Length: 160
Image (cartoon, rainbow, N blue to C red; front, top):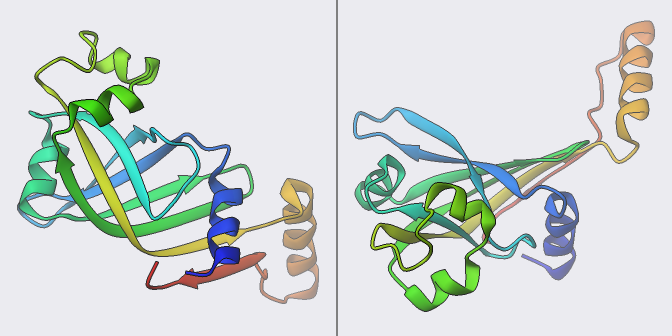
């Protein structure tokens, strides 16, 4: 991924601390749940705090293929990659915050606390840089002219 592509992803996800992490259930069903990213600026890896006995950790240990979606006011980012369960108390302490404390009140030393690292392999984004007003104008224009809505900026980034 080029620096400008990474800069674009950072820009589109900067204000979205929360995202959806999607894993595969043993029967192949996709399962998504909201998660809080521990480092707000996106990079080629994402970090999450979880509990060892959670279903997401079980899923990742069985099949590390995951998806992460991030939505902003006028943008949507879809990330695909491989996840790994990481048992690293020092990193857990470094990333610990009040969001994690809501689910794991005993802090990073809780034996059930664990990290999930997602290594991003590809990304796709959709952005309407003009904001909501631009979107409404484009939708009205599409309706009046009969031309399809252009949807703003879109790009796929492979081999992140």
